[in-house]
Image 1 (cartoon, rainbow, N blue to C red):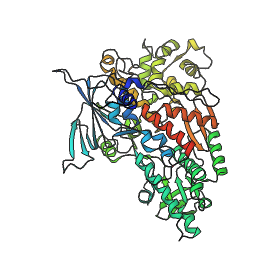
Image 2: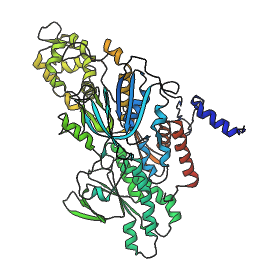
Image 3: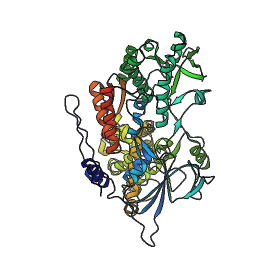
Length: 580
């Protein structure tokens, strides 16, 4: 019998007993105040699948997609009373916020991906994964039509039936039907995109180093154009600038001075969703770094050699380029667009759901992540029903006491009410009602239906769509999993707000997004951080905060360790410029 080495024993022990990998990683940042901690114990108990009991038919839950929303749902689902089937052409989860780092070799592609089978095998549930793409959803018959991504001698299509369908397919890059974009630009939505961009960057430098080119030809080849001034476009431009100045200068000294990076943004400023202080700092820093930021420049056409832009003045100009990266928003996938036509949502840009993430017009289909948007119900649509529910004595007027009894349900069902009160610096809805009768004491308020409508007439102006970010998708997945975990319990004991249209209460509390902040890496080991309570931090300390948060948010200890080792390698040895 072969004697195992100490390393082999150690490796086998961690492989066979995952609970041994419960570790704590400490980051000392900014003088030593921030700790990033994560528990690597498997979610859902021991490994293995719990077989269904004889005669007990489990509900079939089909999950489409292995992105942030779908993976978050799978990780948080604990109820073993479901038979879960995952369908996705991508057999891994990717930590997409680090895709710009992959484009220049700061982080390796495999460091930010986790096989979906690694995730589901740790669940004490019946979960199966199939590598295929869904090309049709039949809501009426509760079926989805799938196509295998592998060559199976013609046996590529199959049908999956469901009781509940979770649509978390994400979105595609939006080209806005601009001619030439699809054919000539590179996108940055998937891991494969980042790898292609990385090869393209190296190709440009290798081509420009050939001896039979003029300086003008080299300048064109080394002109990198980034279209889109959002977080992804800005971070890629910053990563590319650091790559050129920290690594490329050592390897291609003759072409360094010919490199140019241009960032095109149709709006007036880059990072428009960030605080004004961050936007101004980013634009100043890019200017100092030599990155050409052109705001108010709308791309109208892309050829294989030039990008045509229309300026605010109406003038159309052409920009020669060597490589163009397109990062300007998201569009609807064809299968989602066909499904929207089927259920009467053809004119929308994304699947409309209610506040419980259920697709409007269906009873067993849920949609979350970038492919969907919550269609928040307006207060003024239900104003009469709200008044009637609050007016318990049917007097035709609403008193302060009656208003207070339903205020929590109103704010939970219509979050725009709470936001409106906060913006107006009012303590509760009674203060808002008092504005309609300023000469009356708060406790003596009595409003009829018209006065009640007048008091709430501006509330719906606070409604906003949630951003298409990983943070939103992950929270939606966790919320929906919690609903499925407690489905039977909440059927018997509803915990949601009052049904103003109808009787009783809703089964669950509506989904509420909690914003934990956002980052914008700007290169040179400087990052802008915008956190809750209007706290803005810019500089090197925020970069260490970014490292810590992104490391702690990795989906597993394997990816966490790999990402940290990649960062360490880059600090010591620089970025790798091999074309592989």
